[in-house]
Image 1 (tube, rainbow, N blue to C red):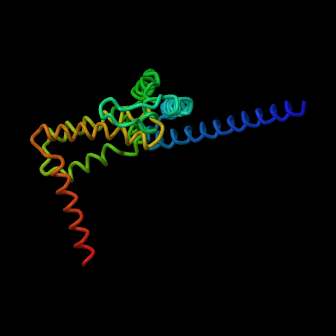
Image 2 (cartoon, helix red, strand yellow):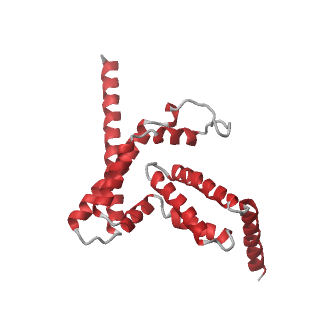
Image 3 (cartoon, rainbow, N blue to C red):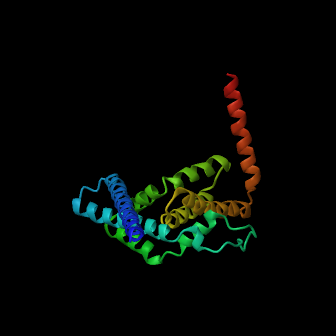
Amino acid sequence: MKKIFVFTFLALAITFAKAQTSATADEENSKKAAEWVASLNLGDAQKEARVKEVVATHLTTIRNWHNAHPASTVPAGINPVTGNKLSDLDREIIADSAMPTTVHTALMDGLKKDLTPEQVEAILDKYTIGKVAFTMNGYKSIVPNLTADEEAKILGFLKQAREQAVDYKNMKQISAIFEIYKTKSEQFLNNNGRNWRTMYSDYTKKIKAEKEKKAKQ
């Protein structure tokens, strides 16, 4: 009888702790959504409330899916393209990518209902901590005389990465999604008469030389 009582008590304690953790996480998502929406300065309380609800719901949904579908739910195996063994991050991404597409659709439709295209992009940038602009600036620094067509193509890839990445829970996953599209961008440059490896090598040598020169001053 005593063992049963102890087991029941522990089970209730664990359940209560999980409920508290979930409630705290929900509050954090609500706060984050409110901060992101406030940065838009919409000047319309009802619109702000609707957009905040859309974002908070999405953040909570992807968190719940991620927590309910850990990497261990994906069998260990290899990447069929590279032949490399799947890493834990690979398996996390595979598990999270199985989330119903309706989750992403609800986010995008909800944002577009109340926001301009520019404001929608601003919210997506919040999810991905401005990775589109940061990465684009990197390409501008590395690629000599980047043409308007090249810039537009790469920017398109990065925006694809951003929209896909918002459905993932943490920055490691988001960065991994961006790596997919960075590879596409670099392949595009190579196919467009550039040599990505040479350009990147030249850039790193230039940065190193500048640092050495500054250190001697």
